[in-house]
Image 1 (cartoon, helix red, strand yellow):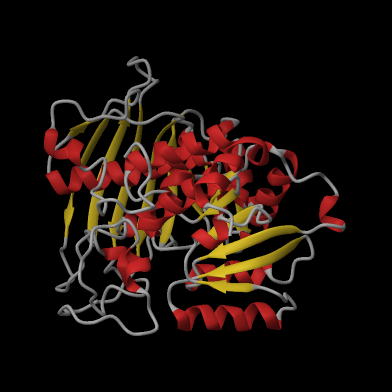
Image 2: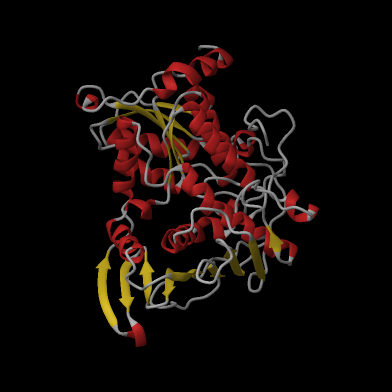
Length: 432
């Protein structure tokens, strides 16, 4: 095996900037790896394994049972010679791997993506792109420094009816869009209470933890339940909410951070070990130049205990213009209303198009273009999740400096822009 330090140094130079030549996929499929073989990883695998323009070289997963299940699926789809590994460093050390899909828990997204970028790999990383705001900025810098494509898994950015809806908004179909709202309203499950215990033998728990601080294993932390724990997830605002917040920001037309964030929320319903809020109401203000007509407001509502469907959508968006309104669902389509609720346009559509998002990523790897959900776009959106969580936890208005990405004069809130890492861990990003 090539020494890790030597390979990373080489990859950050010549290898990283080279696109996958147009048309090369016919004779030379792109060599890829999947890191994280859980629910979303399996979803990616179902689409990637049958493709003729990619060759899956590695599956990487610290849970041996999940890894075996993924290997069985990829082989049955006709991909042979795939290596099963539990440590992602094996993937990064192989110069033949040109791109990686990262579908790990949230706390691994940024560390894995940055390591991959430094190794010259193009990156498709699941949402939310980061576990904390500082990591998101480091991801942008790593992608630009290494000249790699970094796509984030907000697949609505590549979905036809969403793109059409955004075009209508930006063309002025409802006038000036001054306020956008996103909501996450659905019934989640109670995760109960659990005491620390020994992890199962099929799980390499130390690898699963990675650079996160050590905490004892509990059965209501894995799998997928990690989302509701501070150390590993971003809460449901970063899980499902980030999709709709992304559409709200896109439709609102803002391309910077907000300056003011106010929030209320907490655990209103679930009596269990979940740490993140089950109920949140967050308001973000974008000041523009301060003049009337230039300010913008984005609202996020979350009720993860609600069995009710709001505006016909469990998860959705509303855009309020001075000449009309739009209701948009990433599932379902959109309705455009004029004054006095006159229905002007109703477009019905199915689910977000994950295959199109894969296509966009691979096209950009071939050409060197920026993808639809480029890391810089996603950092701006994911920062809203982090800022909303910070304002909810401190229980007061947060004043954010968009240029420096800092919270001046509030040490408690500012500390939450970053996280603590395990001392000396090999995956801790530089600059955190």
